[in-house]
Length: 171
Image 1 (tube, rainbow, N blue to C red):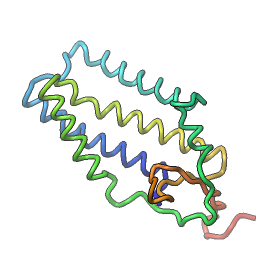
Image 2 (image 1 turned 90 degrees about the vertical axis):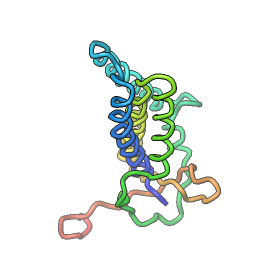
Image 3 (image 1 turned 180 degrees about the horizontal axis):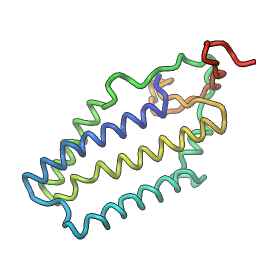
C-alpha cells in the first residue's frame, strides 16, 4: 500500500522531471516555446487554471470532488506501517509515457505543449494539498492499493498518536 499523499507527490516530481527534459529539447529543436511577451500571461493562466481546478476538487460536486472520494474511503481493520516516500521520487512508467506524449505533441503540433507537464504538476500538487488538509482535519491517513483488483480505490486508517522526542507517547 502507498500513502495517497506520497503517490501525488511522486506524480508532481515526475511531471517536473518531464518538463525539465521536454522544455530544453523542444526549445533547441523548435525554437521559443512561447513569445517573451506572452510568457507571463501564459504562466498566470497556468496558475489560475490549476487554482480553479483545485478549488473545484475541494467542493462536493459529484464528478469533480476529491473530498467525496476521501470520505468514501474504506476503513482499514489494521493500519499499515507508515511507508516513507520511495527512494525514487520519480515514477519511471509515468515519466516515460509523459515524456513521449509531451515531445510528440510539442513536435507535431505546438512547441508550447512542452509546458503542459507544469499544469499537471500544479494540479497534482493541489490534490496533495487537499489530501494533507483532509488528513489533518479528520485525524486519519489516506492509502491507495489496499485492493489489488482496484488499486485506485482509497482506504483510510486512524492516524497514529504523535510521539515525543524520546519516542514516548505524550501524556
